[in-house]
Length: 164
Image (cartoon, rainbow, N blue to C red; front, side, top):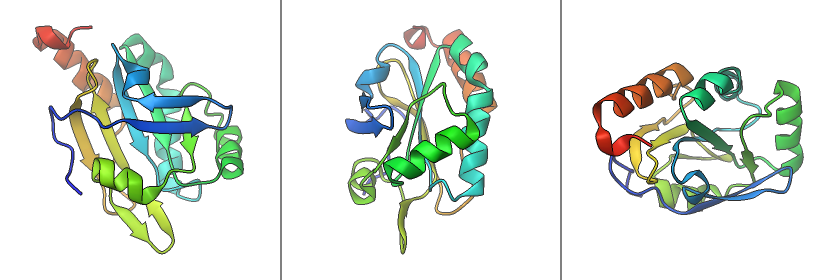
């Protein structure tokens, strides 16, 4: 499982959401910067905090032209309950990820028993290429909204090819 490095194209990854959307990343975000988050599950307090932080930062992210999607191995009902509990309404959250397939595509670490994806985050440029990848092998170590916004603002100011 190779890790995704800056400049690598993000692989085609389809996510299904509880409201019936089917998104193919990175195509769904073409022309925009994007954040793709894999979270451990609704049971993980660190993941809940990260998802809530991205929800709270939704206006700042939108103003910076950054779109977000999240994904876990949780089933549809568990994901729907998570969305309701934390009022996650501004970005799509996918469910039912096949941890082994996602790991093979992205290099994300997989917990074996029970099976889930470890926290992993990617910032993608408007062309769907990886700008930053953050891999965690455990509960901590993840992207935060302020860092993402600062990075995208920096890229827009200093890289003419990244301006979109």
